[in-house]
Image (tube, rainbow, N blue to C red; front, side, top):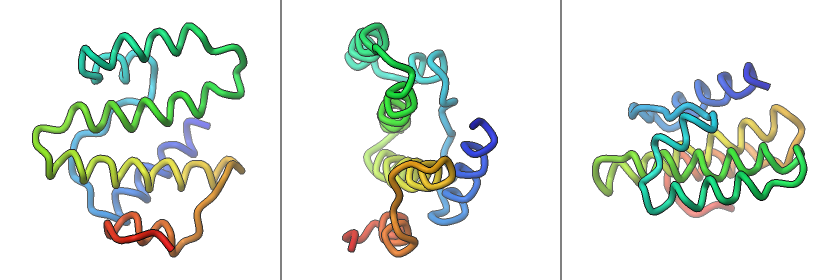
Length: 115
């Protein structure tokens, strides 16, 4: 699934023009990028995972938070969250998970209301 993730990141960058640093979607990468007040929750939730099926959703959620936490200002934070939304949607579609339509992905990338 690493290949699908890399493709989703590249497609999301192209779709919304995100130029910021991308946090690695690993436990260490996310844990390092999170603000201290979020880091404890991250590791607590990680320790409470009971099945491997929820691990992907866990990573998606906390990767988005790590991108937001690592942003230098509010504008960069909003761009990072938009980028994360598009990336996670593209990745979910690639691995057969819940999907968004191309129109919804474009709306997310443009920062407008999702149809």
